[in-house]
Amino acid sequence: MKIARCTDGGAPFWALVDSEAGTLREIAAAFADWGPALTRAIAAGRASEGRASLPLLGPARQLAEVRLLAPVEPVNRVVVAGANYAKHLAGDFGLKSPSQPIAFLKAYGALIGANDPIRYPPLTNELDHEVELVVVLGDAPVDLENPLAAVLGYTVGNDVSARDLQRSGPAGIGMDLFAAKSQDRSTGVGPWIVTCDEFPAGSPQLRLALKVNGQTRQDSTTAEMTWDVAQLVRFVEQRSSFAAGDIMFTGSPAGVGQGTGLYLNPGDVVEASVEGIGTISNVVGPKPGA
Image 1 (cartoon, rainbow, N blue to C red):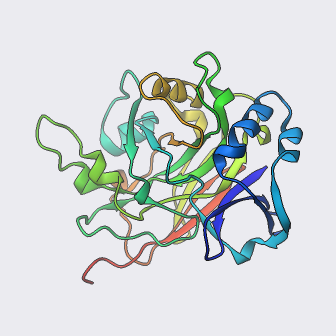
Image 2: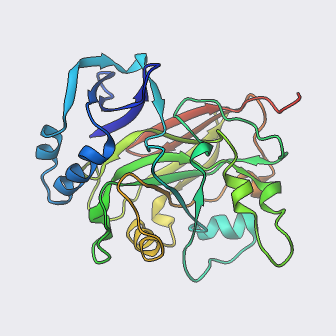
């Protein structure tokens, strides 16, 4: 199943998407009203029953008629689990993998949809890209013995980062990850959630790729994660409980501008893709004052 959060100019709504037909059908309820039940049905091997129980409204509509939003509601949290690809840390930052995952929160206001423009933040000159697999939590509480049972599915993320701000933290305090990664309207997420039943059991092993103006900058696989999805979900849950509808970024592979020196510029077309999910395409907006 593909499930998107959309708008046709009015209030946002969730929809069941048929990407091959280019159509969607509106789900007549908020995520909290159907997400947990669908997640439990999928975890129990009854995905078809879960789909049949979705409260769909009206006839099919054209996908092209709506704007795709980030598939998470404003009441939910955006968790980032970083430092999860050894080659990224070594090649782009000259760092060794930490002994445990690293997690922090991203401001909801940083999110944009699958085709929205990336706002160029006014305080940075080193705007960077990070393609990531994003986990969508569909149920709570998380069972620490089976954390994947709480996962509804996956989507694509581009964790756009202001590297000069990231390095601007005071000596002895560390990186300023809030300034680097919570800049308004900068982080693409979408185009939709693909539910877990569409992938083999366990933590998915999927190809990740990112292109800038058609040129490949990142090309890797989630198989290179230091900690898989189950381990990351468990780690975060033990520190701050997930709620149904929360999303979690899972880290980015090597090839970012921090390592190559190729940062994003106004007008760049940035395409982030995850195998089996899809592609988000966002254009970098102008620098303030330019």
